[in-house]
Image 1 (cartoon, rainbow, N blue to C red):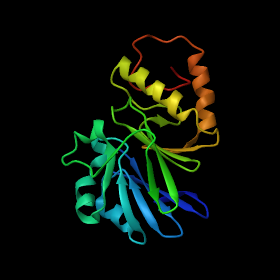
Image 2 (cartoon, rainbow, N blue to C red):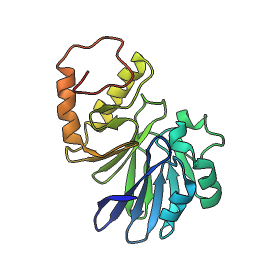
Image 3 (tube, one colour):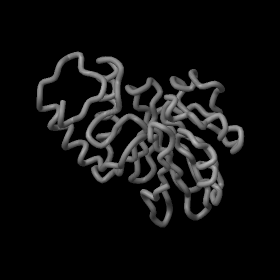
Image 4 (cartoon, one colour):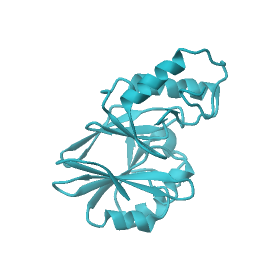
Length: 213
């Protein structure tokens, strides 16, 4: 567990879990100790232990890929808090979430306001969660590139999501992705500008890096 952000109002902790090194995040409102878990990759008992000194209020799901939901069933059963996800990804879950989220929705954790961004491309129902100057981005954007896509249409969709929903945020926005390390939005915008300055094959998709593609 690593505390990746902390101020007077909020604490954001990252847990790297499971065989794919998937990040789960625990966001805690420091005054009340209310918390939200974002994604449930694996090792439910580790997640529960890290939640022990907080009062969990939600599980927020960035998307429905197995490496992000391996511990979901156990945590839903034991924490007994509502699961929130986008409808397009919810239909593939074994049981429906209590809350269906759409772009622009708000989730409150005490005085902390989460703004929901629907960012399809990696999956149809991919979500990012913005709280203050922090963005928990799932597999939509990483340091150096977008999330993996399965088709050229999906790649065009994820680029549209990134440019229209994420690149409009302040340059100092801290991005915490579903795998690996964090990045700063300004860096991603600068590298994307290099990417767009070069020609690319029309069928581009898969694993793409801004500076190497």
